[in-house]
Image (tube, rainbow, N blue to C red; front, side):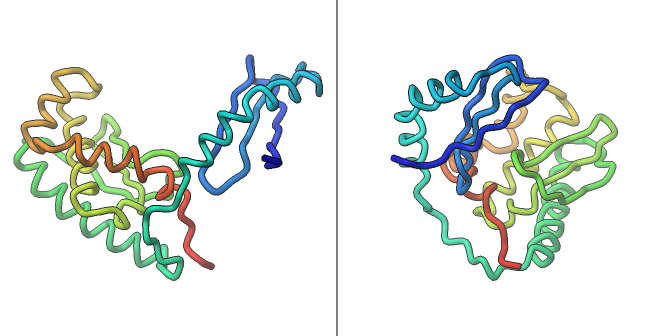
Length: 182
């Protein structure tokens, strides 16, 4: 395998990290003190890992590059608002506002003030996945961590939440890497 590895030197890095982002070259971030020989050694010793990561990155989703991000954002906002309104009542929580964003590595977030933010790409996933992520974030308005109490609350609202979490684990990286055609 002769895939090039993008090397980034960072003053903030205390140790090296190697990632294999979906659809992008593998990335090695190293402290500025790393020599070229040390970089070559890390890459050589992790070729097998890079190959295994690439082998797992087989496109499984049928994503249409003609999808307009603007239209997807509108659809995501509508669906998220619909689920959030219904579930907020059931959970007896107040939603401050709902935002749809272009996250690169997450599906949603919840601020202490009740602002819920969601990745617009959720609209490209099965509805049950979007629904689970919205409920997950709403549950954080009651329990602001991932304790057992939090997961029990999620389970009361979505007993099959693990199926949706597993779908995101299998397909999430591919979906996060999706970029509509310009």
